[in-house]
Length: 176
Image (cartoon, rainbow, N blue to C red; front, side, top):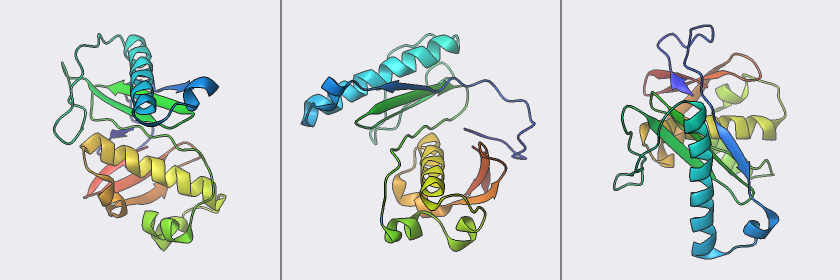
């Protein structure tokens, strides 16, 4: 995901190598701090793979006081993890990544995630669309170092195809 002035998918863009790694059944059973520590390390392994494919040498990765990843040598990075999977990506521009397991959720969460005008953009299965919107919006917020509290300020303004959509956040267009 990157910001593009015209948000046209045919614009040349750098190649990204997002990496998703499975979490073994054994590690899925971990609890508390031990689980968080494992998932964080595993996500960094995914980042190492993304960096290698991008021909980037990782150095000491740091975060700011809010936990936002700090760029190094002009490289931006993002991690995400859930119990069953971790993911990471590195890029030459602000980047965010998110993964979610598709499962049922409340109508209230649907309403908080997108406006009626956004839901009307597609007749895709509502749960698939919900997670597509959620992960896209969270990726934009991660790229900017903004908290999830701004989720409602991200708006899907166009669905290009099954793999691309455009989000507007504070009058900046993001091609996802």
